[in-house]
Amino acid sequence: MNISAGIILFTDTKVFLVHPGGPFFDKKDDGCWSIPKGILDDKEHPLDAAIREFTEETGLALSYDSSSYIELGEVRNKNNKTVKCFAVKTSGTE
Image (cartoon, rainbow, N blue to C red; front, side, top):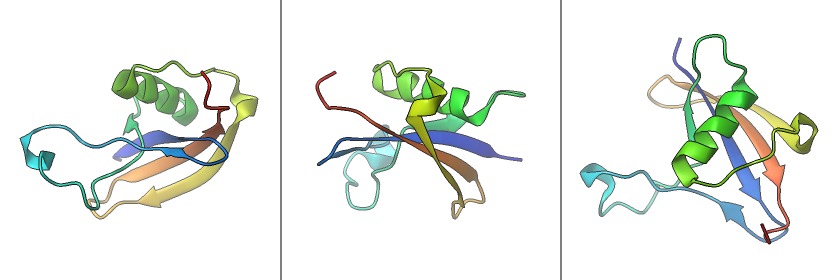
């Protein structure tokens, strides 16, 4: 099964999104924004994968304190990939 996990980082007024790279997305901004996410490694917990992928894709380190994260459930993309989503609030000053 194709399962990914990602994190929505937010403040009181902003949401952190990413834009896919590569030539296919070079001039496509409308509808191409997403959360940092990636595929789970074998037997990896979805939150651990989401934190790992967030750091790999953004270069920003997040806390591993699981009590800070809100589990949002999962969605199935058009390409039949399941994405498990989490959210975490930041003050925006880090």
